[in-house]
Each structure stands twice: as structure tokens, then as C-alpha cells.
Image 1 (cartoon, rainbow, N blue to C red):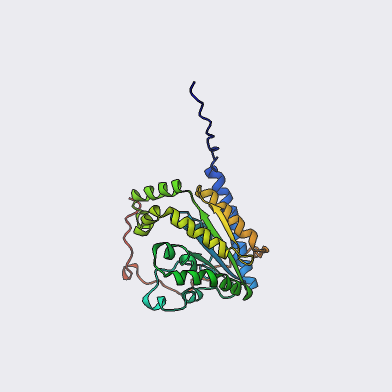
Image 2: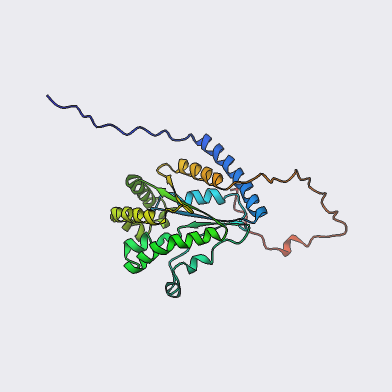
Length: 273
């Protein structure tokens, strides 16, 4: 008699309805504007770190956070590969220059944790440099917190199947092809190595003063809403929305005469056809 297949199927995840997603995202973005004004009013210094595997969805969350915020208050730090000069500096030095002043929020799209991830796995740093990072990073972050910086760290967790699916979709999308680098492709062949590196990183840097918060990012829209909601909960703020503003009357034209239109160079109007 043939045995029955007793393997349990994974429960089907119900994805959020698009209309509900847009509605909830707008609510959260309204709250982010309030948070921005509170940070400015109180002179807070906020650092938010976004880490995770390639194609985990970090950029999508950052884009939704900054979409309606002032770039003078909330800015993104996405550093390129270090120059030869920067390689000779104290490791954290080039990141320190991007830290916020009072009334600013800085979102790190990858951060000093490059050393614990890609640099370690790909052999871009020595074993001594890697071990020194694991020792010094917790002290560095405690120092930031003692200085008054609000430090929040997110790790975006994506399954290997979903990551590969996203990589494949980028192969055929000309708008996303630039996101697929040789380093991204290499990460597929080193999945276990990156997992071990992440485990070691958490063991050393998941500290009380700056804990890691893991975001399940297999479903991008869920990850965006959950991450933004959590971020808002981490910084107590009040609504400083201004009173309703009444537009003043336009200045009278008086004797002003506009110059001839023919004296100006206009962009060709090819739309609408």
C-alpha cells in the first residue's frame, strides 16, 4: 500500500489589496511628515540603517519614506565603493561625515555594515579588519547613542526563492537592469556564506542600545507598511501641523510689461500628440 504524502504545505499568504495598501501607505506618509516637523522642532538627530541581502526591498522602503519629505531634513546616504584614500582612513571615518546635525534624519542605504557582509564574504577586507570591526562597531554605535543620535537598524529578510525571482525579473526589465550587478549575481552562489556572515554580525552588534529589527520582506508592500509603521513607533512625536493658511492676494501688475515671448527659448511641446 502506497504511503500518503504527509508533508504539510506552507500556508498561503494573503497579500494586501492594492487599494488598501495605497490608503495605508498614505496614512503612514502623513505621519512621516508630522515626524519630520517634530524632528526639526526638537532638533533631533536620527539615523536609520537599512541592511539586508541584494533585492531584499530596502530601496523601495526608503523611496516611500522620503517621497513626501523635505530633502533638507531627510536625506539618503548611499555611499559608493571607497576610494584609495578612504581605504587608508579609519574605517568609520567616511560614514561619520554623513551623520545628521540637529533637526536632520539620515537614511543609510547600506552602511558601515558593508564590512560585516560583502567585504568579509567577498574577501575585500582582511580577517584582522573584519574581527576589528566586530569588536569596535558596538562601541562606535554606543558612542553615537550617547552623543544624542537616535539609531535605528533594520535588516530586510528575503528568502532565497524570492531573491532569485526578483533577480530574474530584473534581467528582463530595462528600467531595473542597472540594479543587477556582477556582485548581485555572485551573492546567489554564496547564499550560505552571507547567511553565516549575517548570523555573526547579529551576534556581535545586536546590542541593547541599538538592536536589530528584522523586516520580513518576501512581500514588498507588507514590508514597506510594517517598516514605516515601526519607524514611527520608535520616535515619540507630536502633531505640529500649522493652522490653516490663507493665500494673500497677488501683487497688482501696475505698470509692469512682460518682455515679448519671442525673446525666450521654450522647450518644444511634443506632448500631448
